[in-house]
Image 1 (cartoon, one colour):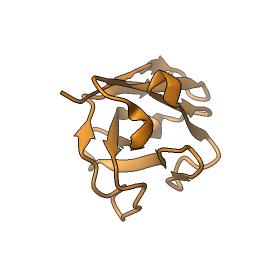
Image 2: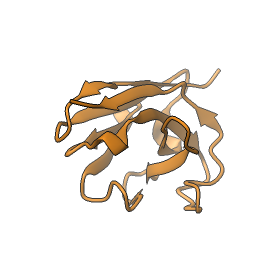
Image 3: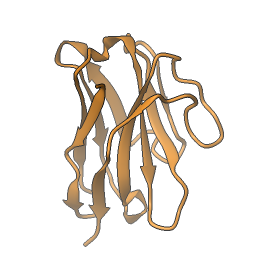
Length: 126
């Protein structure tokens, strides 16, 4: 069964950094585009960033542009989300998801994700 496992979340002070990882279990990630999403308490899930299977194209939500960087290591079947200059507004559960469709941007995020991880909590607080 295809599984995605997120890691790297935790508590960080405002202005700090974290690196999230999304690892594939049971399949090779190199055929999939990977999206990162987040859901804050009381808010709807939103797309944060997406990277196509080859890694040649990426997309970022306006709210994270310039602060977050998505990358992938297909040899390790892992996608990373480097987050810098974190603010309390970045507090959320972060999920990664996989699709073979590419990074299709929609109002709410990225279209057509087929597989989802269970999420990792990021808390930005002093």
